Image (cartoon, rainbow, N blue to C red; front, side, top):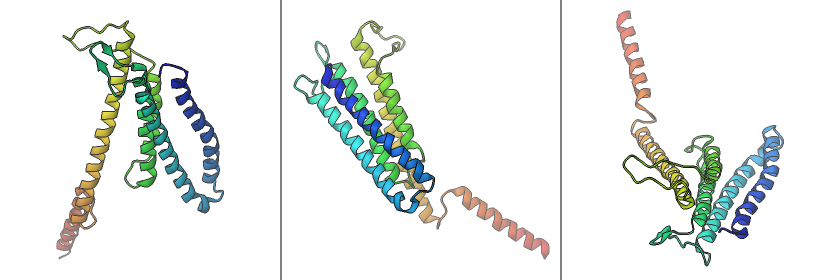
Length: 219
């Protein structure tokens, strides 16, 4: 929403999160220093999951508010007369990435044995980068295509959003590939009796052959 309400909503979100983090991270620091370690470890994990869920909920509310206000685009990006409410689409894209960050926060603490360490912070950094990136930059068109009007604000806004949408696709592809690899290795581990990768089996075979060779030498 290209008005005060449209900017007050994400501003309130960042203010609430900032105030919460100013309390959470000192608590986390003292916890890591050993204060009440056994009692707070499980509670901290629950807090992180709840925080991720709330972050995702706020992002969904923000997207719905930007898209379905009375004068919003209602998921229509382009009409015959041009782009539709690109300011709303920009805010929706920003909310989208913070929603992905919230989902990653939950996955990190629900499936810590699957999700790589630090991936939640990387996705959060990407969300912050996207927020700053949506301020605007210029991309040149591919060779042979009509030249973009670099002075047209609608074109600039669409290019930056399109660039950010490619990030979403990249995240989805990475997540799918990570899940497929994990399922494949889990199946291989079951069939190999605890072996995760073929290199470990090769090492055991080499050790077995070395034992046989040493035995034949002694004979």
